[in-house]
Amino acid sequence: MPELPEVETIKLGLQKKIIGLKIKQIDLLSPKSFFGDPKEIAGREVTGIFRRAKVLGIVLDNELTLLFHLKMSGQIIWVGESKFIGGHPTPDMQGMIPNSHTRVVFELERQEARYAKQEKSYLYFNDQRRFGWVKIVKSDELRAQNYGYAGEVGPEPLEKEFTWEILKQNLSKHLKTPVKVAILDQKVVAGVGNIYASEACFNAKIDPRTKVKDLSDEQLKKLQKGIVKSLQDGIKYGGATRSHFVDSDGRKGYFLDYAFVYGRDKHPCKVCGMQIKKITLGGRGTFFCPVCQK
DNA sequence: TGCCCCCTGCAG
DNA sequence: CTGCAGGGGGCA
Image 1 (cartoon, protein in one colour):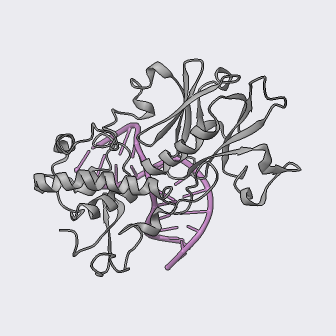
Image 2: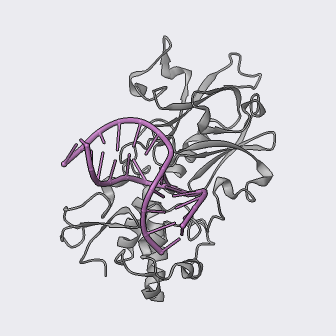
Image 3: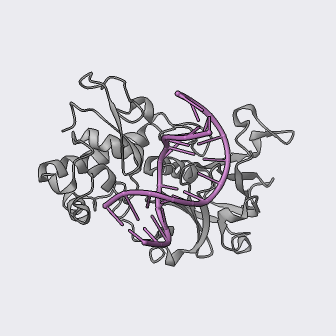
C-alpha cells in the first residue's frame, strides 16, 4: 500500500474521529484477513491511534491493539451514519462502503451518556488483493512482535533518531545492493516504499542503481534528507493515489501530481527537461532522471 | 541476495 | 492474452 505518508494520512484522519468510540460489533466478511478472536475487542473503547513503519495501530482500553497492514491495496474508511441515506451510501461513498473488497467491518458507537442518542459509525477495511491483514496484539508486546513484521523494524524517518550516520550503518549490510532497493528494506529505514524510494533518490540527486558501497558520505547525507523530504511531501499532499489509496474519508491523495519521477516515464524532468527513464530494479519499477541523478 | 508466492484487476 | 501494480515473507 500505502507507504508511510499514506498510512500517516489515515492515522491523522482517524485520530480526529474514532478516539473515544466503542467497538460494538465486528463483521468478518473475509476471515483470512483477520488474526485473533474478535470477541476480545468487542465492547472496547479506542484510546489511541499510532503508526509504525507502514502499520497502523488502534489502541484499545483493555491492553489490546488492533494492527492493520494495508499492503498493496488496503483501505481504511470511516463513515458516520450521515453517510447512509435509507440504508444506502451517499453518492460520494458509492462503491466504497461496503464493496466486494470489504474484508472487515467494525461497528462503532459513542458511549458517553451525555449523548442522548447513540451515534453509530462504521470502520471499513477494504482490500482488493487480500495481501493486507488486521491482527489483535497485546499492547505491551507490540515491540517484541515487531508491530506485525517478521523482523525488526528500522528507525522512523520523521523522528530525530533517523540521522545520516544511522542510515549509513543500516545500509552497511547491503553494500552490493542498488541504493533504491536497499532503502525499501524496512530494517534500514521504516516506511519507505516503491514510490518514495524513487523520489528520495531524485531528491538526493543519486542514480538509483548506485551500489551502496559506492555512496560517499556526502551522498548519504543527501539521501537521508531526500528520504525525509519525499515523505514529508507525501504527507503534505495527502498521500499518493496510484489506483487504490484513499484516506479515512475516502478521498484520494495528490502527491503524484507533485512527484518528480515516479510514474513520469517519458515525461520531461521538472528540473532539467530530460526524459524521465523507467527501469526495473529488484523486480520493481524504478524511475529516475538520467541527467539530474548521478 | 534473488526468485516465487500470496491475490485481484486493469492496461496494453 | 501477458505483464504489471503503494508489500513483504520464505525459500534456495
